[in-house]
Length: 329
Image 1 (spheres, rainbow, N blue to C red):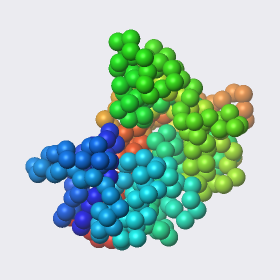
Image 2 (cartoon, helix red, strand yellow):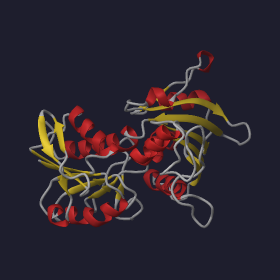
Image 3 (cartoon, helix red, strand yellow):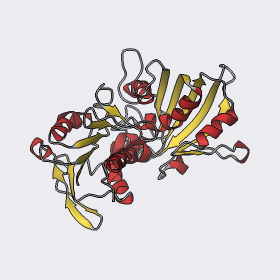
């Protein structure tokens, strides 16, 4: 099996390689791609040194079986169709193809690809961790409305976001964000739209509907950047169709693959960003009734945005395809 990783020197690309190694993904040949700027770097992987190659249209037109793509929307729009045309299945971490009707948008605990095309989109990081607990609630109780408020770590902006936080602590002016992120909170992720929402908020709204296959679901979001290095937190406010209780929701979530319930407030036990960092699971807690709306509940949710929110989810998609095709070890 010929595997390529695009964006191999970035935060998510590096995590993809770690997860590929950890999960024992079998391959006969591995090619690492990056921009021209990072090409030539030597990366040690599974006891072997690999020179990172510059991604060009000629190289993309070579045959690969699977491509893990994490190099931004513009790069994906240019190169993913070339990889696809040459016979590869492309698992793309950017937002470039997510809302195209013929492109699968996949979270393996929630849905499976139909592969009408062989580009598969990895959803937004905050959407991924939110739909994992929402899926069993949708199945058990039905969903009427979802309202998100996110608290997103700076690593979601890559190295530039991390640098703004770390250097801002030393008094440096930001170079990535429009305002300092150190000792601050920014209600601004991605660009603002005419209606006042940001693209990040629109992504969460539209992706939730697509992944859960609930096009009429009422969804809204406020996305916020916080001075935390890793792991996003999401406050989910959900209105259910069928009557439910806090106890019933806890029970349903406790049986969902990939979810860990941490909800013992008497002992100050609830999901924390520092506890989900470096972990594969989505953590949920602070489950309680919203007394202001009928049959509505609050759920606090944390997950590592570079793992489940990006690299791990992509590799899990790859694993599911390999298993389906009998290509696992």
